Image 1: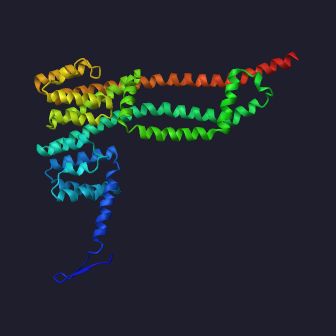
Image 2 (image 1 turned 120 degrees about the horizontal axis):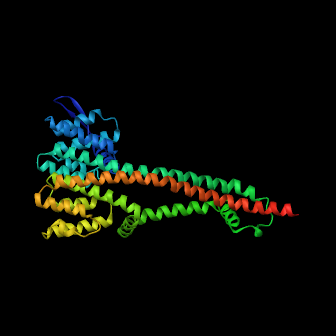
Image 3 (image 1 turned 90 degrees about the vertical axis):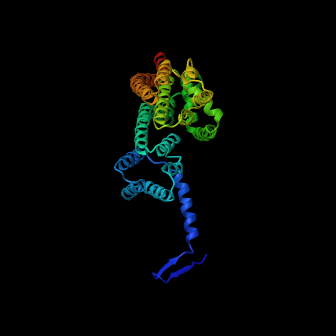
Length: 382
């Protein structure tokens, strides 16, 4: 496409218009790619807090975003702020700007921002969102921290075993000519060693296929339902996972109610924010009950997914109309319980790992030493 040049006689400015369409196309394409990226938790918290502080100082939203955009070093976040400014100057709300980035801003966050805009309390809503994001992020970090240590230990042990099976065990077993006379444990060790030496690639392919299959299957609702049900049925994990879900439920629900989002809409948002299909379906049923004028306490009373304490706290809210203050205490309680449970599990993991290592070393040692001792006895007798 050739460039079209327009000469403005009034100010003698030369404008190049020919590539405007191409520029618009690439800008839209860039915005699509940006929407699928995800900003870090700490950057999102900084955004919420700084905008809240600037709004408290009677600074306009456009000026606040402009200030953040000028001092931002991260190119992705800087581009995001620039898109925010374009939309805000077109008289769009901040919630509409956030909805263009679903990977970074959850539905509960945009819902609270939208409610804050309607009630003229956007600064308070942003501050509540920042607290909510920090609390939930802290819980996830603790859970990951509890799982990283045993995962690293197990990976190191598996790697050491593989190295021994490929390089050490074959050398030790070369001294035995008659493999049929060896004990069962030693034969099992030989079979494992031969498989890892000659057919390691099948294990590699199996892992890739399993990963691809699980990545596809995990997108289906049926898989989500059964996998989430499986997680809730693991005894100790059920305790941790349930406390995490309940804490997240109480915190998001409380903040939405405090932001003047309706109970029905809050339940819908919470159901889609928990990332658990069992709780999602149950909360959606609760939402339908609320639509039919059934009290929340009556709907969840006796349900094993909701403990008695939460039911009683919700009953207090229904009697005093202070849900946001009442149920946030439930979230804080489960946060503390979650931390205690994580600390207990960390203490239990160490002896379990020691036992696992001891059993592994014992199996390898007995498999190698038993035939050696038998061979020594044969030599001694002869």
